[in-house]
Length: 154
Image (tube, rainbow, N blue to C red; front, side):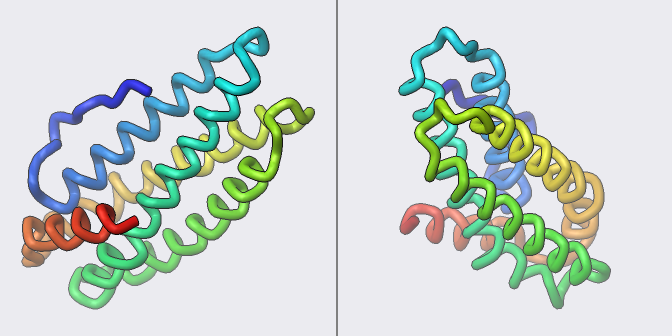
């Protein structure tokens, strides 16, 4: 998988999350370019990779990022709750995809629906939640260190 860097890449929490978002978007785009002629193993491997990366990303958001902003960023509580619900839906879809061999009739459709769910989630975070976090007095560099440390343990 080709990873991309984002103009926001840096040492703060929002940059780390944004980089993850771009990397996952790139992986979904690579999956969409695969054809039915590509090996089943290649398609299944990439879908599972996407799922694993999403699970790590959701864990750092839920375990570190969301708790840090929930009570300290005005207006963030509702967005955090919605994000947790969206993560639950994504986890369910990832579980279904991982349980499949990749040649089942609905495999590609499930990957597509997961992509759309994540695209919606990312758009809400980046357009609604992140500006509120940026405007807060949170130490985003310290938060990034906590997030990176947690991700390394996953």
